[in-house]
Image 1 (cartoon, rainbow, N blue to C red):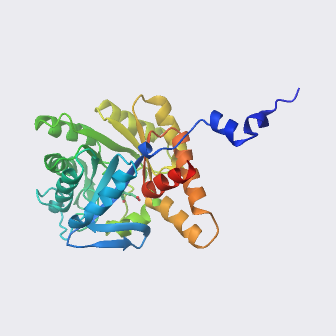
Image 2 (image 1 turned 135 degrees about the vertical axis):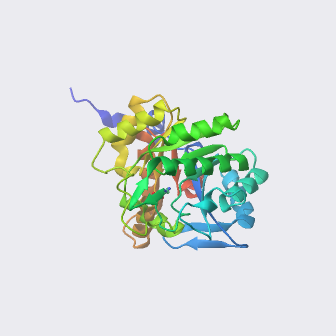
Length: 323
Ligand code: PBG
């Protein structure tokens, strides 16, 4: 007898009934870039249809985000002032701290997640403190902890350390708990690879390293057992959500994370993944909506519970069109 799998593909109704993975606005976190200044909404060259916003212009965007049913945003700050130790990253009135307060005022129910890293704020563009050409671990974590605390004090709901220093969750959990922020959660960029897919982001955030690369702290794209060690470390230090980044080129890592840990897995569809689709569509080689939605679906099918994506707004609009 022939096994006729095509029976369950015969028409739209049966395909809908047996569909295993379904995207919804609840899956998406939207990254937002805030800049100093006033009255700024400027399209980011390397990330078409994403914008640099000054704090006073966030209202319009937040209204759109909420209207589309998105539950969380991830904040990145682009400061005017940089120095060796990223001091503007933990200033009480720094760009991110002001943006957090503004968003919480506009939409208290929207989950505000903040990226904790030094690279946008350091003169050398590295994610930590540099001494004799090395990126110091524990010293960098002292600063990262201060950044995390300043975000919590401003009202952040969730802290997302992306610096790939060892012990990041332990350090940040301790400083939050010591300061009565036991309710603030941590989503760690646990398996963050040293990836060329971050190129467009570094242009958007002005965070490219001024010497060397990030290979002494971000992971080697060739390794997967190492990713499991990173996930295990963050898990044992009490992380709330584990992240794998980038997403589509690392679906195997997402799947392994999903199978091994009973914690939510976040996947970051990074700037290069986004901009390649944009560029391909602009050249007329691919159908943007179809490719973007298939990528997001595949990331979810691989095991991601939430997806950080520059496509969040478009994806929600496209999902509405389908109904
Ligand atoms: C900061 C940070 C980066 C990204 C998120 N947080 C850049 C990097 O590590 O160089 C990349 C996001 C993207 O490419 O969309 N460390």
